[in-house]
Image 1 (cartoon, one colour):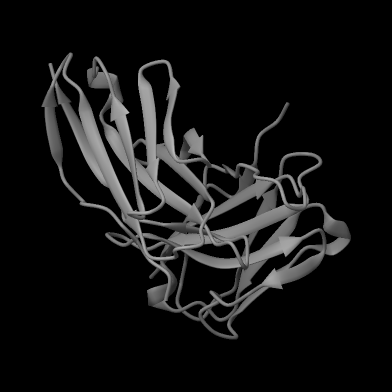
Image 2 (cartoon, each protein chain N blue to C red; image 1 turned 30 degrees about the horizontal axis):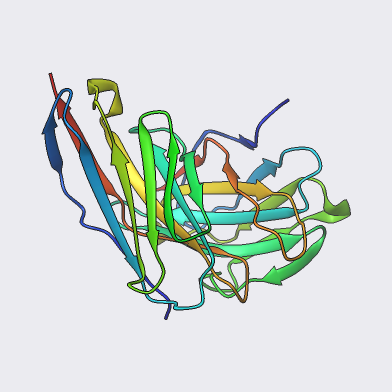
Length: 111
Length: 116
């Protein structure tokens, strides 16, 4: 059973700090990784995708991928209260193309 | 451009009744996925269509669930008869199909199903 693991949190950070969200996955051959943000009662919203080892930056968000360690992370710089949400890590199965989700990490940014 | 749309947004039905959920993917997206989130659990895969064909239905819980995608456009997910444990939020997602290339999936707003 291919798995994606996340710490459920909550992760509390003060406004303006860096929030660091982590995810590990079990399928060594996975190539595609995604971070979704989900506000309470809303649908998951894609915020980052990453396919190559290293860092990918988009505004205040940086995704980091280390395939050797089977680890993907999301950094949110200058965290704002509006960033408070559940962040879902998803890995696309290389064989079936389905997306496998972690349980999500609940982030609270304290004003 | 319209995103993924789902109907209804909420449904409350009695145990034993039938419910049909609908998903309209983003235009041009051949991949269509159904997922379900039960309270406190992760989003679980149900099945995957490529156009009108079922590519993977390994996540369907049992034969009370039937998904269709006639014509490769919108999809329906029917639960018949519904049981209490079927309660949850059903999400639909779609993505482009480009062989050998990475594509991103976009989600609908979900249907919250409550079986009482």
